[in-house]
Image (cartoon, rainbow, N blue to C red; front, side, top):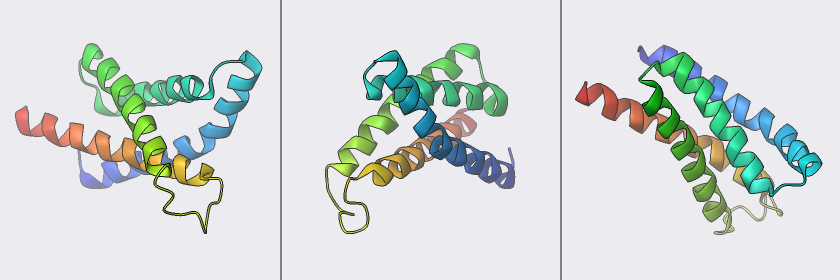
Length: 120
């Protein structure tokens, strides 16, 4: 896959992460579930769509990497916000968590892609 196409796909994925956070949190409130579980499942679903449409690997690999990346990125985003690095700009750390989650996901997808093309 050409770098320009990957950058475009990552940009779309980043935008989807940013715009999907609020609806996922509202869905979690209506379903009365833990917000982290709702966000994790929603981001895993976005990752599944990305994996099946963009990467087109084997279905088991798509599912494993989509769920794994969603969980790891959400976990690391929460750990990143606990550092309180951007308190002056984002006192409640909500925007920091959303952006960190999106960036970690994209970084992990690029790592997985690079490993895959080097091995295959």
